[in-house]
Amino acid sequence: MQYNKPLLTWLVAAMMTIFLSGCSSWVYRINVPQGNFLEQSDVDKLRIEMTKEQVMFVLGTPVAKDAFDSSKWHYKYVFNIDRDSEVRKSLVIHFENDKLVKLSGDFETPAEFNTPLDN
Image 1 (cartoon, rainbow, N blue to C red):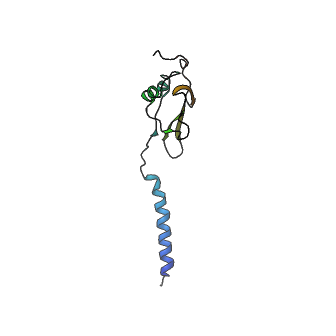
Image 2: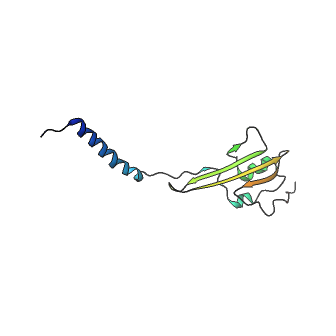
Image 3: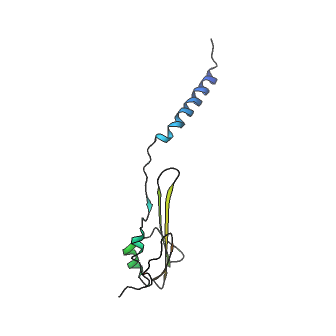
């Protein structure tokens, strides 16, 4: 019996590709958190009229500072739990005259936010 060698080679290659593609879910993927992990308790420490240095002391260095507008800092966090779900959190800090004036994003504004710290 004589086989068509190119056709047999192609069939073997196609079968191996199909079998190996099923193994991709076996690869262990480590979940790496990216960005600034913040909790509501961290945000609760913020007060109106805090300086940029005080905010950085409480929350750490922001992931991104707006290159064209130094009055906004962005704190972002992404964590992939598995292939279908991920956790995303964002907090934007707004400054005027280098003093904290407003928060926006996925966190609640603290109840005591409008009470400035004693200097």
